[in-house]
Image (cartoon, rainbow, N blue to C red; front, side, top):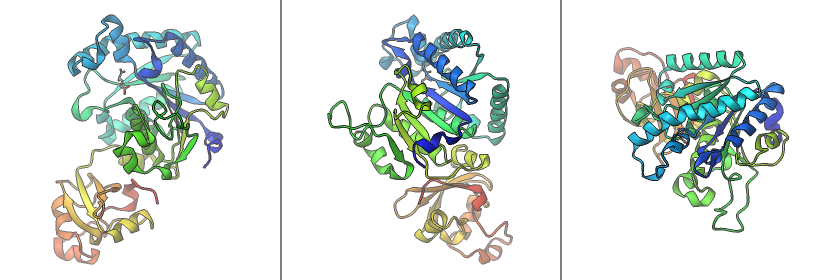
Length: 376
Ligand code: GLU
């Protein structure tokens, strides 16, 4: 897929705008929100459904106080965000109503992605909002989000929403022009990268060194882009401070960096497996099994498992990693619990019945219940 072909069929787009792009010094830029309203109206007129993920609650809340945000503890930040969220929404309501668009507020926590019922319920509700012609404005529920129900940052939240809502494109708006070949602040020869294939990313490089391909929070954007790439969704990272950014993107101008997926689109259930429930255990696979899964699109059989970690029940989500290099291979819903898996690991499927006295299936994880974490 090349950059142009991203735009062939866009029915639904998730636009995430970060605090840095929304900020005008220490305040929210109302102008920026007005530009968003204008651009989103235009997109909707061309038949594209838009969902916004907006940061800025803490920034807006701090307009009342002027705290040094870097020094605030988590409780104070949560308190500030609760004032700021309503203020932020008041800007959105004002700007969007001038364009005759109704907006709604959705404050999410990560736990909706762990439970299939809550996930489906949230999805159905958002689809209903879209049917009603409303632009949902989504943020993390900062006031209650701590520990395991936390997204961490809105790039992750936006990627999960993009996958949940079967978006055709994810746009991450920040305060820099995109991804550079090097840090443009320190290296004059750093070049803006127009597009990159999912496969050209070396996860090792991204995780280990901010400076090689990213800087200033860019790694979380790359991770978000790679997360949705696995589901066949492209991402454009661009400068949200540029007044015309959305117009330019949809006029096929070469703005920002496009991350082009090599994976094909997968169904919604598989997306949920891939992004939703937290892994309850880990299976270490030998190279034969890793190869069969990644290259031959096979199910996981007990013979390929060398060791297991964690305690899990039948049907829970586990992570498969390669024993050789500890890199993630796939996530899947397992057909046996951890005690059973321990007994049958390394054995042939024909031996399961003899070992356990029963057999649910030949596979430990059926292909239909598995999502790859690596591309070929
Ligand atoms: N939820 C935070 C806020 O609205 C922002 C988190 C982020 O930017 O990643 O202020």
